[in-house]
Amino acid sequence: MQRSTIRILTTLTGSLPRPEDLLQMLYAREDGQLTSEEALEARICGAVNETVGQEVATGIDIVSDGEMSKIGFANYVKDRLSGFDGPPTPWRPQDLLDHKDFMQAYLASNRNERRPLSSSCIGTVTVRNKDAIMQDIANLRAVDARYEEAFISAASPGVIAQIMGNAYYASEEEYLYALADAMRYEYRAITDAGFLLQVDCPDLAADRHMRMANASIEEFRAHLQRSVEVLKYALAGISEEQVRIHVCWGNYSGPHDRDVELKDIIDYLLQLPGAALSIEAANPRHEHEWALFEQVRLPEGKVLIPGMLDTCTNYIEHPALVAQRIVRWARLVGRENIIAGTDCGFATNASGARAPSIVSSKLASLVEGARLASQELW
Image (cartoon, rainbow, N blue to C red):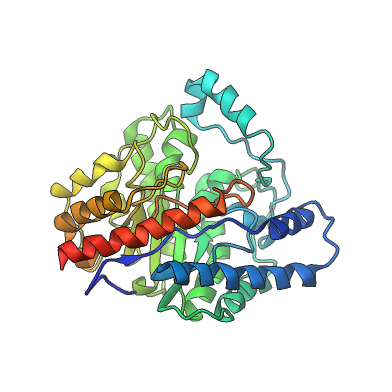
């Protein structure tokens, strides 16, 4: 894994807007109406090539395949693992439930956005499609653009359990370890291919207001400890230098006033396997938490990827603001321990993306902000 040794490096969190024609093909597959699997695979490969080329042209240092093959950042696994044939799992963030007037307006404004189904688990979880991740790897290998480093995202056991509830296993713990055993194939395939693995773990923060809003903080921390142990189990044998972990509070434009504070979970997050930790740091609910690192010491060898762009707004951050944010973090934890990133993905569900032109402009601002910060830091 690269470090910011001579300048501040830039990256993103993974998902990017799918081209409209690809989006329609992904949903045709979801509906069982796809006319040609070969045509879809060819279009995904082309979209990865286009997406990575755009990232490189913008100046992003550590690129992603944009999750072009995935209908959603976590529920894609229902097409790769067995056992997910149950009814959808409800999505009920407590912050939205608290603000019912906002929730009605929010749902109305998103009525035309199609969300992929999050089927619940009603059978034994095993790998049933080993080809899908190998095709993702092949697509990234085939891109024309030259890049120094690239990563492929994969869902964590915990976020799969959050989004696709358990109606089969005797306990949540049994379900989590079954998911860990199944997802290990994908994790190893990515790292064995020489790419960085990003494990997406929104559950490590968002479970507090998604599934444990009425629990005590002690109960949530016990849940968090178990989730960390499961993740360590799933990643056993994989070099930490090939792993980055992404943690967020849910990539939606809600109130987020029920989000657990970073100070209440940072000790567990810094125990996570992986050389890099990606966290939200730009949005209005969490930007202030940079100050926590005035007291918290970053472990030796750990890299932080704080978000410098808010992925839930159409505001295009000024490069000077991005630079200010980077410098603030770098002066606390060391310039070589910072990579400038984004709060979350720009299209965590395939149809719920920011406009491509907005995304492009935001990433360009990230790159320019990193250049300005580097001038000040070196």
